[in-house]
Length: 134
Image 1 (cartoon, one colour):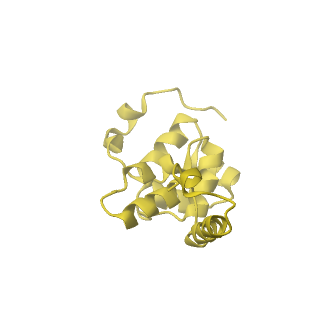
Image 2 (cartoon, helix red, strand yellow; image 1 turned 90 degrees about the horizontal axis):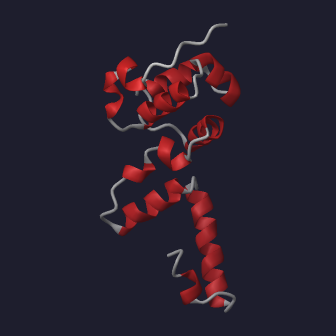
Image 3 (cartoon, one colour; image 1 turned 30 degrees about the vertical axis):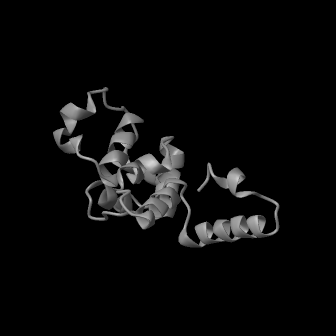
């Protein structure tokens, strides 16, 4: 199979200047010179699912999907999920952004908070030792 020559992605797809998970995933896939079906095989996703994400039929892919794509495409989860551009105006938005940035589900994040609170209550950790985290 003959792979295509490297043409700047911006010339091939001028609409890729906006930011969305689908656009970033497509850029990463093209940057690694993978065909859609090759990426599908490597991630155990269907070519249709990846196509739907890239064409923004699926606007917010599931975290497990982003994790699979990030691993194969060698890109950070936060980058492919566009978590870096989420708003940070409220404490809730900041928590959500931090949780997604680290690829945590709500359940995972809740477990971490329980462990931190227990560590504070039992004296195993101090508020000062947690200040870089919270």
